[in-house]
Length: 209
Image (cartoon, rainbow, N blue to C red; front, side, top):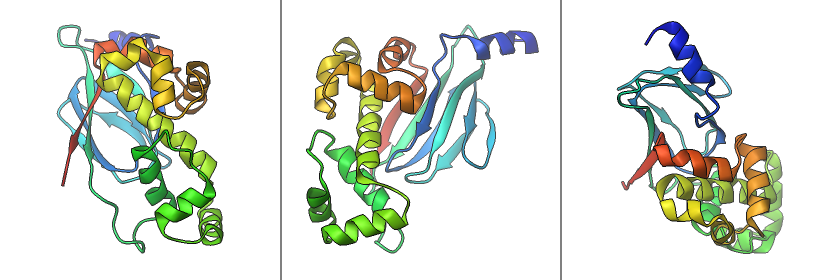
């Protein structure tokens, strides 16, 4: 494909783009097919077909779509998630450990008291530590509920057909609330992700260690 064709492909509104991916796991992003544009707070670049990059636990990365599509094979960026436990408390922030707890139980009625109990610290200590880390429980809960919903939409056709049920399963009051939250966080609504996910452009699997 020539340069002009690549530019047209990259600007196609049918392409999937997902900003602010922040999972409470280490993950490897693998360009299985095509070339993919990735960005973080410090760098931005293209991941060529066959290349891979590691993203550390609870780090933000933006998937800005493919830059080149071979119409014969399409394009695919695969997220290989390492579902291992965080390191010791000295090496893992409270926000990261709390994010993992919320990710695993997104429909829980999370409160400061419950979060403190799960982290085995006092409510006062939890609030003070999150403040020092420039984070808040409500933001962590909202974000990790979105992460669970996103992975569900990418992995299984069933949630794509029933966004209302998915919203309830991950702790949102309605599919409309979830749709708005998706748009604000990812730059793409849940309904749009559901439509575009059928092409299997962004996929994931888990490696337990």
